[in-house]
Structures are given as C-alpha cells and as structure tokens.
Length: 364
Length: 134
Image (cartoon, rainbow over all chains, first blue to last red; front, side, top):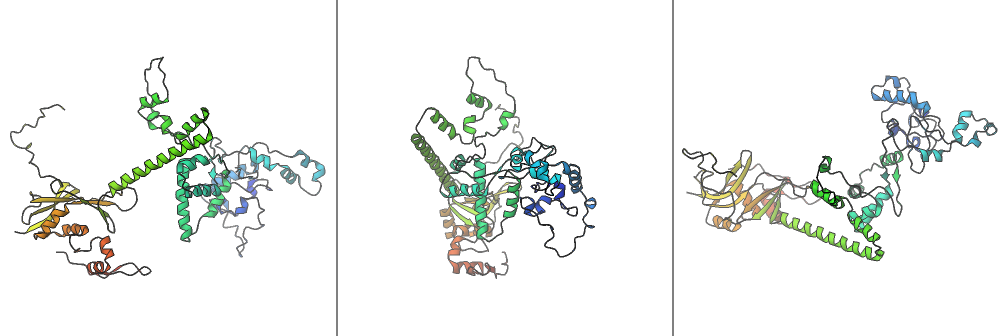
C-alpha cells in the first residue's frame, strides 16, 4: 500500500519524503504529524545533533523493492493528489484521481496578489472536505476493485466489552451493534488479554493502533451503529458443486428443499442470527414490541439453559473420577470393575492353522 | 512364588495399552493373569477443552487392588506409581505432585525430598539425589 501522506498544504507526495530518507516502513516511521494534519517541523532530525549524511542514504543506492517504490513515487508522485483525511475517511493516493473540487472564487487573480504563488493559491482553493467525501476507499491505486473494510473504533470495542460485562450474550451484542458474531467474540477475547497486560504493566501498542486507524476507515460508536451485515451466510462447500435434480413443475421448491437435496441445513438455520428471521416475521405480522421483547427474552433464556446443561453434561463426562495433575499430564483416575475391565484374553485365532479354510465363506 | 501387581502390554507397535494385572511373578508378561484389575493408557490425549495439559486415563478396580495389596501382592514400580495416585500406597518415586500430598505438606516434603518455600521465594527446589531404580 502506498503511504497516505499529510496533504493539506502539500502539492505532491514527493515533497513529503526527503531525498535522504529511506526505509521500507516509511509510513510507519514517519512521525505521526506526517499522517495527521499538523504542520511538520522544519527538520525531522530534531533528536539528532550530528549533521545529516545525505551521501549514505541515497535512494539510488538502496536495494530491493524500495527502489521500485521510489521509482513509482518519482513517476507518479507529481500527478498525485492527496486530499485531506477528514472524519476518519481515509484518502489514499490514486493514480488517476478525479479532478479536485476547487473554489473558483479563491483562484481569482485579485485574491492572489498578496505574494502567494499560483500553485499555492490553487492548493488553498481546494475544497478538501468535498475531496475527502469523493475519495476512493481502495488503498491500492492500480486495483480499484479492492475496497478496504472498515475497522471498529476503540470506543466501539469498549462498548462491546461493557455489554459483555453486563452479562449479555455474544449473540445479543452482535445483533445490537450490527457487528459480526466472530468479531464480537474476538474483541472480547482481546479485551481480556489487554486488561491482563495492563494489570501486568506490559506496554500496549497503542501507537500502532493509532496509525492503522488513521489509515483505514473507522466505524465510530453511535447508539445504533451499522458496522457490517451480520446475517451474511458463509458459502458451504457442498454448494460448490452442481447438482441436477428432476422436480415436477407443479411442486414448490424452496430453500429447505434445496438444502435437503444438498444434504445440508437450510440457509435459514445456518445463517448467523437466524433468530432475527423470527423477529422480522413478527414485525410483518404486526406483533407489538413488548410481546416481541418477551418472546426474544424467553428464547434467549431457553438458549442459555440449553448451553448450561450441555456444559454441565460435558463437565460431568470429563470430570468423572479423580484427576491427578503432574508436571506434564493430567491423569484421569476412573473406577472400574475387575470383571469387565481390561483387554481380554480370548481364545487364540486359529486362522493360520493347517486345514483351516481362509477363503471367506460368507458374503457380507 | 510371589504374586505381583504389574502391567501387561497390549496394543500395537508404538501404540501401547496396558492391563493392570495380578499374576505370578515368574510367568510371561502377557500370559493369562490371575486377574485383570484395570487398564492404563500411557499415550497422552490432547486436552478435551483444547487448553491445559494432555491427559492419560487410568482405570482401576480399587476394591480388588486393595485386596491384593492386603494379601501381600507386590506392585511393580510403574504399578506402584499408579496406585499411589489412587492413594492406595505411599508414593515411592518422584511421582505426581498429587494434590492430596500437597495438602499434607509434611508428607509431601518427606516423600518428594523437597523443601516447599512459601510464595515469594523460588519454586520448590529439589534437594533429592537421583533415587536409584530397583
């Protein structure tokens, strides 16, 4: 991905990177003001007292793909338009960017008189807000069909975790926040780890997060967020193959029949949040909200009870008998009955004896 | 002739399974024993919940084991180790850090020949010399 560059008062990206600066991790190594809209300081070597050595770090002398990138930048850099990131809308470099929306009034010669160059005036006249709105969401200039998926903001994650702490099921959190089940589960797991790390005083990689969030679309938390579709059905491998089935014309053939023919569960059952179908049906039927809430609560309770019973059965099955834990293993000690336990000492097999017919006489 | 409590190997190559058997000491390992009182699967199975230590299963008829010990049957070393886990005999070797033993700190220290240092210090340091195997 080409780096997103600090744009607001820069004509082209090639100006941002000094000729002496070379690193494959350029966007990450740049201080954050190169990504955000603050003005960069005049020197990027504030921390150093020695003179910069331009001789050592020439682009031409650096090997590998970095050269390719530099070449690309040199070739396309001047043509690139870099609008301002706004409201967490990322604006990526594009090869053939649409013409930037400019304020024609600002370009009038009268207004340019006070010592501003023509180029600068053009730059100032750009309506960056409109540009950001029109910007592409693909970080790959030559692959416009790739659309970067948004990530959820820190506050969003916090809200997921708070809901979990308030004893809400993953399913319910997912439905409430329009966030996939897997994502909710992952956020909860990672939040647990984060909390543990904080308790252990381990450093967190917040800087990395900040940068990544600056480079991607971020879904902010709102009371009814729309992060993604939560009812997307995963492709079942059984549906990859064609299946021809002769069906009478008069016979209705629905999703359930199709699933039966393929030998899988119907889509209505397989999809995540299949319970939302029932909710929609109730809505259609004009059931009152209170009634709907009641039905949903009952269903949730039933599900929780089933899950608990299942867990208990499993624990009972696994925990039968005493367990002794050693350094490496857990020994499960199970009571047995001497009459029934052990591998049996049976009658010796006689199939190798002389005269015993080994040709099978029965067809299974 | 001595009656021994020992293991008889079953299973296939590289996949042992043992019967815990009561048999005459001088009979062959897999000969028909006087009694089979349990099994031992030495191959660790992955933890069922996906986390934690792998487990090994031991089945034992504790009543029969107690009877045979009572009439003087001699457990072999591996069987001694297994029986100790069931709490039938005092552990002989550096077996399991058995919870029961941990509760009885004095016994644990005596058997394991270690000194338990309370939290804050280094973990239990083994002061035991390698015990010669019989």
